[in-house]
Length: 315
Image (tube, rainbow, N blue to C red; front, side, top):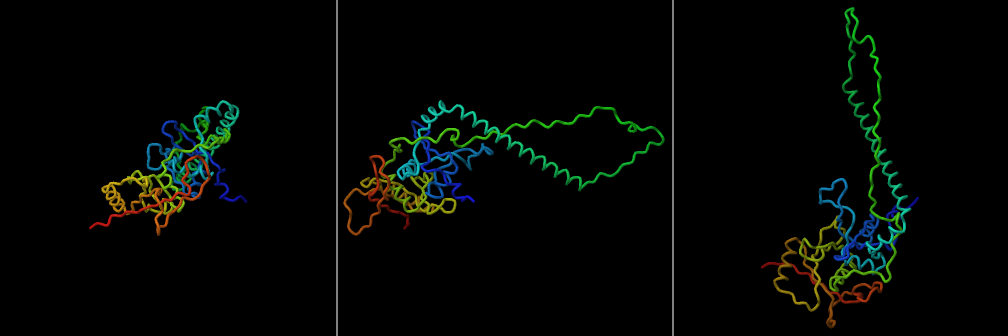
């Protein structure tokens, strides 16, 4: 027997597609990768795709999953994923595998026809069950027709050609694969690996909180960078509203008060943090970002990250 966990584990490193050239956005289309990253590596992202059965609503969304640049950089630096330029990859692949593309289309057509047959069979079975229930509830009484010695109109059967109704031809269902491989081969890795552009304090704070086991999602609706959860957001409310700042950045007192009141008003703490650049103070414990793979020139590994939580106490 195969382990169910193995069936849900994608091949690592997994591709993350950069789908925009100007405003760079990073997306994952494989449902195995989405669930595995959430379950194993506390990576949330945001689902942005519509649901085929309910395309007019935007409350519940589906694939693809759009990742934050900080999430992408963390996955690339730890060797879990790599970035693929979607435009260049498709342009080069479409010219090289026309035969595999036609074979894959035929496979999809057969799968769609099988789904159509199964649906038609299920519909006929439901119709049969409904007719059986109706016949049990309302039995048809026997009716005798009196002719009074005269020939009845119904004595002689009508000589009429009877035709049977032809079942409609089945049309295969159209299924849209969420990934392009197969038929395309797995996208190759770029050398050197591509890295998203992220600010130093933002990535340092994200990496620091993620290393503590927190889940981080975009915090736009709360006016911050990250909403910080102690566990999966399906089970927990967020505890902090996190915003990254430079160590020597000046903060307006009204911004501090506003952030503290906002966090307290939604039952959370307003958290600010960044990379310490000054001399290490005595008697103060400093948290360091965990070591990661040496990729690129900019690195936050080993830097001292300090965080402060502000709450509004009132007077």
